[in-house]
Length: 123
Image 1 (tube, rainbow, N blue to C red):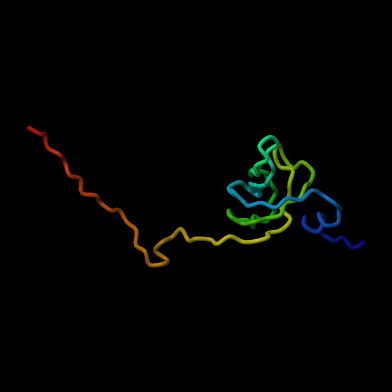
Image 2 (cartoon, one colour; image 1 turned 135 degrees about the vertical axis):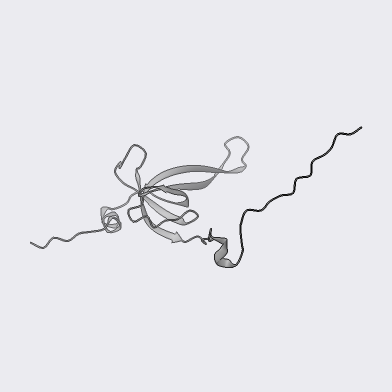
């Protein structure tokens, strides 16, 4: 008997029709977890004005591949923890990553001393 191991993405595509949402990654500071903010546009019931509604979802990211600012697609799955009921399916668009080390692009940073001017008493 040959056993094959399947990744989470392959299992998701085989299951069937699950609820999918597209949103941007807000945080990835937790282990194997991302926070995805999904924005949808709805019409106000009384004033008929289009407004944006936002909701945050905790999603499982097995390989820690999503970074803040990325646009991702998440899909429903079984409860993985108290808050996680979604799994990362794929990354739709990667965000531009700005380097935090400014010395790599030629900008020197260091302790800068300010000259403080003490004001004397007025007579």
